[in-house]
Image (cartoon, rainbow, N blue to C red; front, side):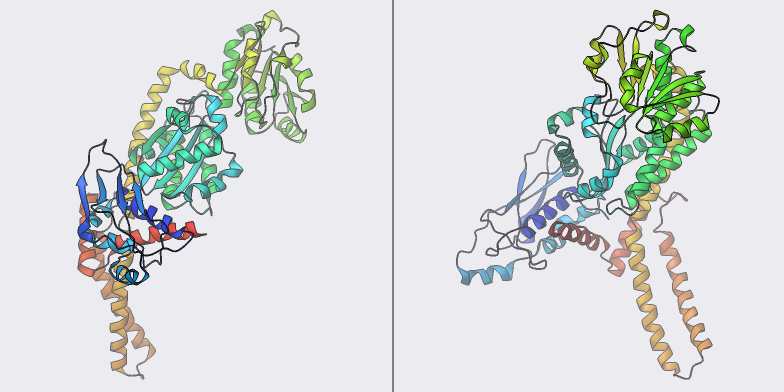
Length: 571
C-alpha cells in the first residue's frame, strides 16, 4: 500500500532530518494525537509547519531548538500542531519529557490521519521532448546509456522516490519514477535534472511536461508504439525502450512497478506494429533524414547526388540502408575505423561504399552535395569557419550543400546556416517529413490508440492487483501458522510410532483444508481484470480481512517504506 502524499512526506522528512543530526540534543515532548488535526485546504493554501518528536523507537535525535519541519503538500489536507513546544533546559526535566514522547511512527499509527495512508504511490513522468523543448536544452539534459544505472541510483536516493527509469534519446529526455508524494517527487526530480544539466529549474519548468498514473502509462505506451515520435511508427524507439529494460535489470531502483510498466510498453509496441500498418513508409529518424534530404534536392538529381555519411554506428548504418532503398548506389562513409564500414560493405555487396578516415572529413565534405552526420562527438564537427571555404555545389543538384544532422548533441553548428551556399537540418526539422503524410498518420494512429486503451486497462488492472499482495501474503502466513501449530498438537497426540505415510496423509489433509478455506477470500482479493469485480470492491474485501485477522498491512508497509528511506540516508 502506498502512503498519503501529506503524511508520508512529513514523516519521511522528519526521520531523515533526525537521522542526519550531527549531535544529540535534549528530547522534545511529543505532540499527542489530540494535538494533531486534519482540515481541508484550498489549492492556494499556505504551507503549514509540523512539529515532530524525537523517535525513541527508531533512536532518533534532533539538534536544533527549532525542530519544526516545513511540510509543503499537494494533497487536499495539511497537518499542523497547535502549539509550539519548549525544549527542556534542565537535565532533570528531560526524563519526564522522554517518558511522554512518542516516536514519529507511533504518532502516525495513533493519529486520526492514518485513514489517509490508503493512497498508493504514483507513477510520474517528468520529461522534455522534441514537442516541448528545443534541441539546445535536450542535448544538455541527455544522459548516455552507460550512465543510466548511476542516474537511477541517484534518483532513488531522493527522499520521495522509490523507483526510477531513464529514457534518453535524440528526441526526448524522460524520467519515470514511482513517487511517495507527487508534488515533492516532481520537485526533487526537477532539481536533480537542473543540478546534472546546469539548466536553471525555472527554464526546465517552462519546457517540461508532467504526467501521472494512467496518463503516464498511456504516454509510454504511445512512445513505444511510435505515436509520439516525429515519424509515425518509428521502430528505433521500441528498441530504445527495450534497452531501458535491459540496462535496468539488476539495478536497485528499477523496481516492480517501473519494470512492469516498461515491459508492458514493449508488448504494446510490438502489438501495434503487428496489427496496424503503422510501420509503412518512414519508420525511423534515419529514414526521415534521408527523405528530408531527397525532398530538398531536385528530383532529377536523386540518383547522381554525391552522398557523404559521417559515422558508421547504428544511426549511420540505417542512413546508408535507407539511401540504398531510395536508389543510391554510391556513397562515401567517414568513420574512425574501417571495421564497421567493411561489415556494412559485406552486407551490401552491390553498393559502392568508399571508406575514408575521420581525419579526411573536410576533404570529403568538399566533394559532397549532401552530408549526413551521426557521431557521438560532444563538440560540433562543422562550424561556420569550416564550411565557408568549401567549393560550391553544382546548380543541377540545387546549388546548396545540405547538412542533415541527426546527432544529439549536434555535430553541425547552427552558425553554418549563415552561409548562403549551405543549409543545416537537425532532428527538429524532421517534422517536415512527418507533415507530408499527415492524413495517413492520423488513420493509423486511431487504430493504434484503440490497442493502447485496451492495454492500458490491462496494465492498470495488474497494478491494482498489487494493492492486495501484502494482505494475501499475510493471510497465507497467518493460516499456515495455525495449521502448523494444530498439526503438531494432533501428531503429538497420535504418538511417535505413527507411520510416515500416515503423518504425510494428515499433513496433506491439513493443507487441503486450509487451501479450500482460503480459496474464497483469495479470489475476492484478486483484481486483475479477469472478472467484473471492481478495485473498490477488492479493496473493501482487503480492509475487512485486515480488520478480522488483525493483519495491519497498511501500517507495516508504511513502516517499511520509511525505514528503507532512513537506512538509505544513513549509508
